[in-house]
Image (cartoon, rainbow, N blue to C red; front, side, top):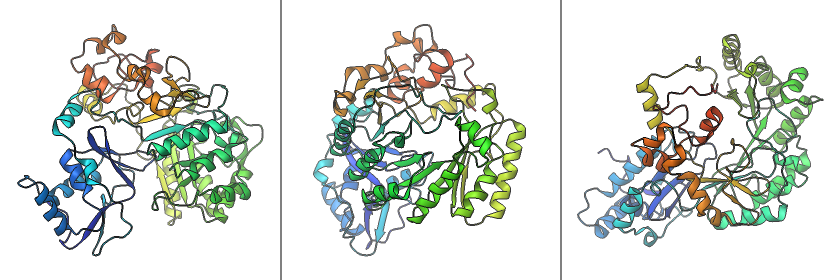
Length: 499
């Protein structure tokens, strides 16, 4: 086995961008990435070996210690570290954290490295085996690692493409949210997601974001609202620009879909154009040295805008742009929002010109490689995609709290019963996470899938209980959450076109 290119005298430590802990009877490792959190399940020996790293021991010292504690083990310390590092580097859907590996390396002891108590990572093999072999517990965490803190469903716009079920509901007061956020910190939860509405549509929205900062939670600040210099200064004073765990910088995403006033009004369903205020908001962030990302959802209504957006905001100092093609909104949709062949051709030309003209910007997009939607995948491709799916995080690793406190598992589902799994206005996160209601939803019995392929499927337990299926796609395609989604290779009913 190829080992790490690490001299015996170097001192390795686990990068602070990763959380490493024991969850139940297995060690877990995950990246602090709010876009696509990579979660790794380690064996007891891998976890114990990793727990020995503290930045104060060289590889030669670690190897000697490991051999003394586990004499005769069939892998060396270097081989185990290499195996875990390779797992991290080669993770699917890699978005950044981990692409350069798991370890900070130095030729001298690292005074500020994170350390662990190896005694916490001594796990009985029989307990680990039992956890791993049970489809209800093998991939589900004892504690969520990400909580969608949906403070409001209100927004400063009414976008034609909005994916959230922005139903009206009573909003929990700031005081209760403070308690929930404090509980999150106490449970060791580092990731929050204030999505599904615009926090600044609440009068106390600034206080809510300040609370996330004060509790050192990592999140993306995404908004369409106008933010003044005074508001931005308040967020900075609360710790927004202070790096999480000393290494991760929080980011700002400004959703700006058009710079032509008439297009802006049409796609956002607003009476007065907000283009001028968007420009000012970008300038306000830049005045504090914060580079916001300008993101646009590109639809059939605004496909001529990306080149204009880059030109206008580049002049103001923006250098990071993100263009994402429209995918079906389940709560509001018209076919004209999809990009047709002419629109895709125009967009590819715009992106080529953007990249040729500006050599100092970052452009992220999913348009260049867009292909016409297939009516039906061939069986072999469909099964490969199904088996390789990431799986549902809702109820396995993440939890959502709606504005009124109702707990949910998918931010794109209907915000109503029977899709609520608890109530944070009255329950703690811990109580909701281990409640019978949540467990019953993510681990349904076969009877719930009567007269569908799932009812008699030989892979039911490992598929539904262990990894989960997209009940959102099933619900919006067939009106039933307890139905195989369109991607399932055993489901031959056509589903909704998503893009």
